Amino acid sequence: MTPAVFLDRDGTLIEDVGYLDRVERLVIYPWSIDAVRLLNRAGFHVVIITNQAGVARGFFKETFLAEIHGEIGSRFKAGGARLDGFYYCPHHPDAPIEQYRQLCDCRKPAPGLVRKASDELSLDLARSFVIGDRWLDVRLARAVGAGSILVRTGYGRTEEANGPSDLRADHVAENLVEAVSWILQHTPHHG
Image (cartoon, rainbow, N blue to C red; front, side, top):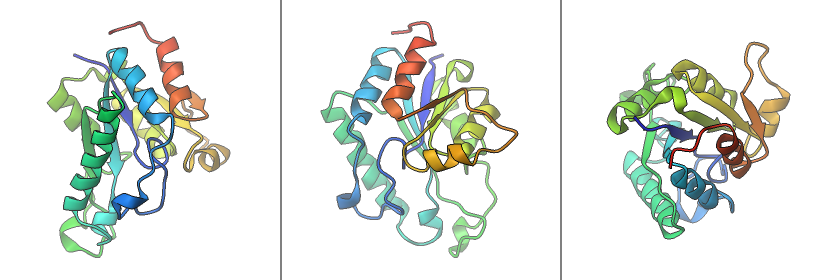
């Protein structure tokens, strides 16, 4: 069983541009590839876990998500970094498109996507972490028994200022590379 770092996509790994509906709008943070490479070297699987309600709202199709995730994966690969999986929730309870209008167990903070990734990739959730720019990423970490890091990129700074009284992240970091540095300082080496 391998530990993993589950990364939120928009605002954590890449710039949050609202609904990313064209490849030309994809901007990877300058530190993201280095951060993922560090996790790869330390023996962590790196898995993207993302809510993509734009599908449910009809802004883009699942085929486009496959295309954009392929593009992200190839840019990381070109930089010597490996993303081990992309897991997304296309649902929303108020979706205008009926096939996606549902209360599901995969929309963060529900644990469905992490559990699916864990089953498919043989991951050790107790030695894993969730990194994201929203409290729902921290809630997801709690739901699956993983460590949690809130990053201040994307919505993170605003979220940090308006945190729920019942929830604390294990760590708050400026960005993904700082979050990874904290993980590597606080875990035994695996690689």
